Image (cartoon, rainbow, N blue to C red; front, side, top):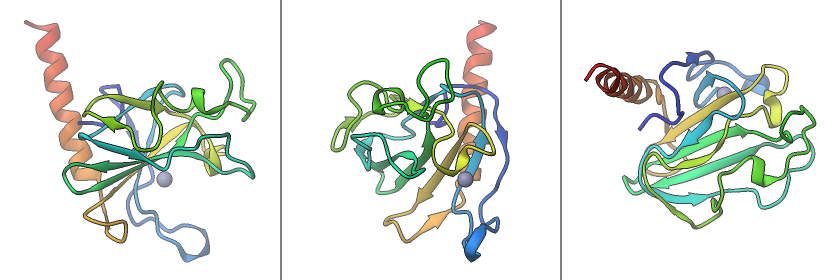
Length: 163
Ligand SMILES: [Zn+2]
């Protein structure tokens, strides 16, 4: 499943791009409107969900431990109260209702909402998405899987609008 509830998205920063301090970018950035629902890409178990608002400029994030054996990391979820840019939103505005550590989810279930928490504030709302094959030490470029999932979704919605 594509991790965002929309048919078109702007891919910006790619896998392996340089980051400050010699780090490499371990995911894909997809820019889209704040509050765009973030979806589970596979069936799995939710982990790494913040129970309280993160302090010191930290972000709201989700780790999805997929039943396929892979791990999927979503970052920069919304941290603003509705209608504001206050960075004071509680977890209920970052995550969908009932999303907390240990919860089982099915593919396409809403996990949370796009935002600009953490260091995304200057660049604007986007989803940072990582895919780790097996354990956390093995990030791979999620772009091919993302593009394939997006074309499948586009084909589905085209069929729906032209029966
Ligand atoms: Zn990123």
